[in-house]
Image 1: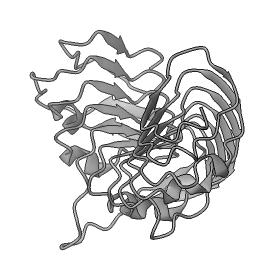
Image 2: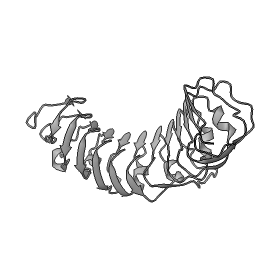
Image 3: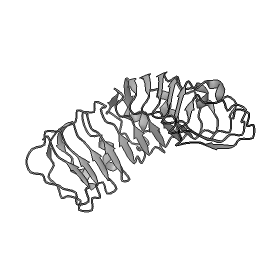
Image 4: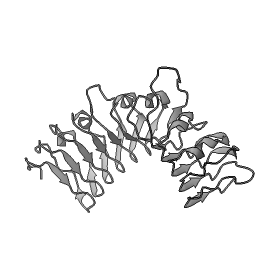
Length: 281
């Protein structure tokens, strides 16, 4: 396979392939590489990807690759999708230089063993639509203002990585608004409150803020997010429902408010819910 010099498109995903990844550096015209959901293992040598300047999409997720992520992947000039989730990759992520990944839209490194700080320069990749770094061993703090730079962002995944989110952000005139995020996954990020900028996200579909330190009443504006279908605020310290006129058009299918400190009557039951958990309050 390493001698297929005219190879353009390779999809061998969802098989039972084992062993190491072959080198593709002779396939100079390769644009698409998908080997996700196999049983491949071993390292990912940078030499396997050198010279693949036409690569647009790489998906090696759901395998057992280990070692560091090849830095050459971030320097491929036309790469739009880099998906390496559910492997055993680790080590530190270096900073993204200004010339790297100029058109990258999807960065999925979830469920690996990456550690250290999330590179600040990730938030300079203005073309990013999806950033999924959940379930790693990162540490440190991320500023909400950094997220604000990603004007095209629709999916934000930073759950379960021992990371703190700095909730303070400048709301000054002239600053760019937050992007129209649709999926927010900020479980276990030591949040003290529900981020207020979410109330203006008219296209929000999915919110997971479980396992934080959010206190006080459940804000009524959450029920008025007309596109919201999934809400998980479990394992916080919410105390009560705010009184309000409920949005009868809510299309929520999943609501999990378990393991809080909610008191009094259950004042809202979404009529479309297929999963509803108010236990341990």
